[in-house]
Image (tube, rainbow over all chains, first blue to last red; front, side):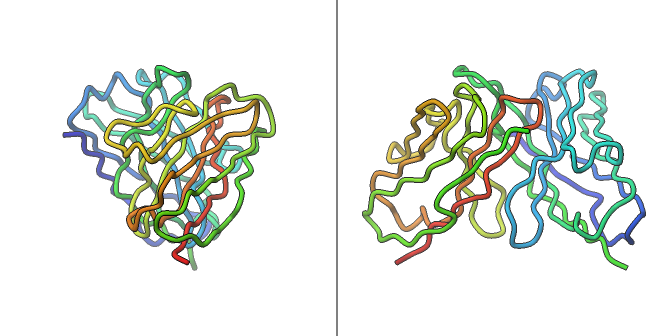
Length: 122
Length: 107
């Protein structure tokens, strides 16, 4: 059974840093791209960042480029998101998601974690 | 930037209704368009991928179609468990943007 379990969320002051983790199990972790998606309270979904299975390729939303860093440790089956210079408006539930290549073209998220809450407030 | 515009942003419908939600891409995204359903307090769940491929385990009342840059999610006969928020997502570019969501509420 595929499981994705996020951790590391909490209360952090504006301008500070936080690192999120996503522990994966039930599939060959290194074979799949992974992503982070966030959702501010009462708002829609926002794709944040993605990383290839090998970790060699990374992608970021313009809103976090230069401040957030996605990485993975395939020996530990764990995905990370290092978030620096956090802003109040980045208060959200952060989800990790497994990406699968569709036979029809393009990727989609076939499994999601339960999310971890990040609150940025003074 | 690839913008995804969903309509309507919310709607009221009754059990048994046929429901259609539209997502328009600002540029060509081929058929790299997915649909997700999200219920309150839960992670999203994929319904449709590649514009019209039904995800395994999803009821056949859900279907997707594409016409150039316009994509449609159709629920043929709305069931009580379908009241939720629906999102489209493009994965054509390297920045996988979502639409703003469509909340389907009980009339």
